[in-house]
Length: 368
Image 1 (cartoon, rainbow, N blue to C red):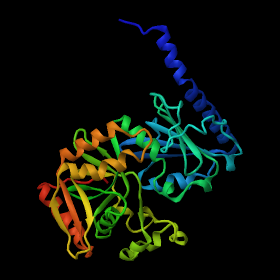
Image 2 (image 1 turned 180 degrees about the horizontal axis):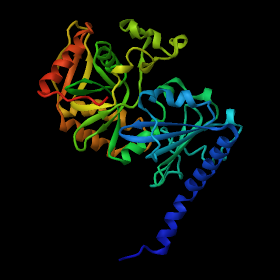
Image 3 (image 1 turned 60 degrees about the horizontal axis):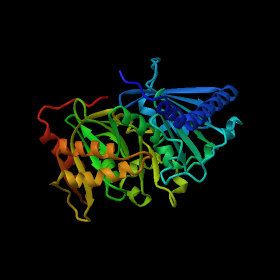
Image 4 (image 1 turned 45 degrees about the vertical axis):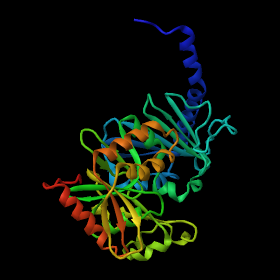
């Protein structure tokens, strides 16, 4: 068996030195913070895997775990992924001083700190950073202060780490909504303003099952299915009139002049409609027409790919060719449709229900 030259091995070790050293220093700082302010753990089942969140103190507890509420697990098994979360303001502990201020990409990847093993991202929104060691299935998430976490991260926390980790396990975190019933479900793909959230919430409030509004996890082996990730929805303030039953669940009612309404669906009467997942029957690309009636038209895989791939790939650090391939495989594996959304919102769930019933003669129980 051939052996790599010593120079090659040393180069690999040298390439990992900076990110390894920084990761280890941050992990020691987290452990010191947890020792000072106490450790609070929460466990969840996400995408079929056990995820443990280790909090140093309680400052980040609500911001970074509330969106996962339906997936809470009391399992004592060894987790598949562990994420350590801490802030300096509440703990009094500071991270090691980073040396990369001029070496960040638009998506936050830090030059010289990303290798095949270690992933390092500066989080522009919070001023913190996210680190991941893929060999140990261990992540470290630090922010200067809990109040630096913006509302959209509260609605979809830890997205970067989960995107990385799920991708390493042949599952794809995608920018899409998903709704369904006993016959399976549909993936709703589209950029902001396409009608994606309106379609998902129209289905939810009409009694359909809900697996997500903004980001979900797709698995294609052994069958194509979707998993719930967050229990939240984000709605533009000028669309709230269509969903008066959701107003009491808005988390940020005083900030709707500058923020979308952040809604925690697990807090109210809709909690029972949030499911862990279901088989996928179709991909829908919504389009707001301004007409009264909703219509469904057969669409090409290329149209669905264009709606799904860019916002999935470019929203995540280290996103790229593998994401494009997985999304391409998905839209070729199941039928794709253009959903022309009408102003009579009651027609949207009726149209999707009819599609699901026609696509599956023998109903499948959605995973509770």
